[in-house]
Image 1 (cartoon, rainbow, N blue to C red):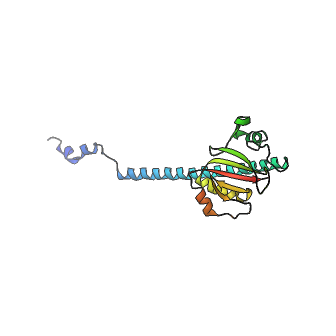
Image 2: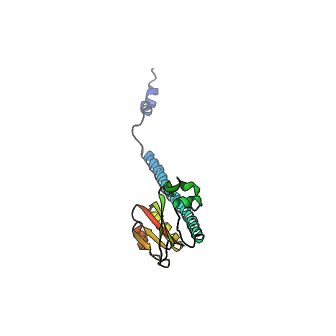
Image 3: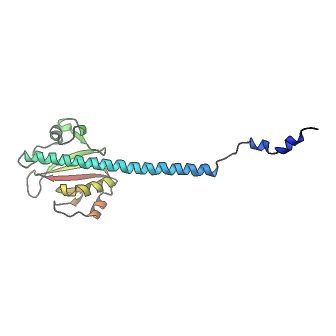
Amino acid sequence: MKNTIASTTRPFANTLLRRQAGISSLQIVVALAVGALLLTGGVGGFKYIEQQKVNNDMAELGDIRAGLVDFASKHNTTFTGFTLNIGCKQQVFPDTRCSGTGATAAVSNIWGGSYSGTIVNLNSGTNNGYRLGSSGLSDNACIKEIGYQWTQWAKIEVGTTVVKANPTDPIDDDDINNACAGGTNTVYWTVKA
């Protein structure tokens, strides 16, 4: 007698060796879960990095403001003669942010933009204010920095919009939110000598 039992006891032997085509639902669920974790971590990581940049920029702005006030106190409470080049030489701006010399001096900021500066007259004074421009701020950074720095500056503008005209102006969140809705913002911080 031939071995017919062997062939009848394993009738599905050939089908077990075949590969299954396609993706199983379990594989799809695992892939979606991994993707969601990566996306959540990426967004959270970006927010953390931007918050660190905001914190670093606020500390830097505080140091720059102190350097500007110190310059004015040594020059009869005026900013007469102050330039970006002078600011770099006297370490009003961090060394790592300064490039060029003389008329070509430039100062970069943490946002990949740059600082600009203009001597201004405040409250019928002469050359007693310095308007420091900082370009490249995101909407979120613009809103947060203005909120945190509100009391430190005599006047604050976003582009051409004045959000704080006088040192005693109360903070208005709606004005700040509207002014900072430009995508990439330039904020002008004015300090009084």
